[in-house]
Image (cartoon, rainbow, N blue to C red):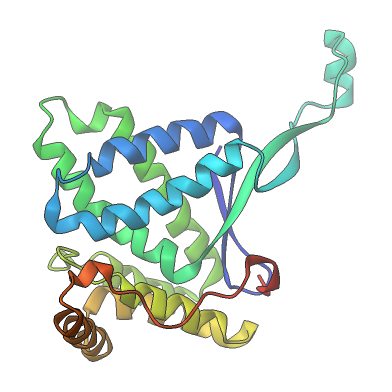
Length: 242
């Protein structure tokens, strides 16, 4: 079963599941976001979700963390059944930043809508949609257990705004939020999780300035805005106080 938990210092969340959980989610996310150039206005969002898939894939290859989880069968039951084996199952896990996973959860809402428009089957029975929604629900459940009830309620309102759209979203802004978030201490990170969701969803002054700056540099360099990268580098994974 897929599980989302905050990292010890609230840099992000730990995504945990067995190989089959990750494999099903990996395939479902690929189907939801479509092929290259299928949804041109959402290409930048598609690439961020595929970045999450990259971590899923590497976790399945054993290139991320592993954890051992009790399988829940008592010693008495194992003895009665004549079962011999380990008392724990091996699960896979990896970490992702809070702004990143918040963006992915919100952007997936539009990809689900686009996917539904191209399908004739009943969405309530569609395994792809239900698997993707399982990820989104697990993130939201984790947030409900991490934040104060009032903060969580306000945050969920921002994340569920029906007027929100990520069409032609400048995801370099997400890099800015990720890097800014990682510079803060544990307490400040926790206080600002809901603020990150609001910044991403509302696309306010901060986002609009980043957008103008990107367009200006792209015009000067005569390149597509998608080729412009945020000027600050991410810290090394091992150096992050997760």
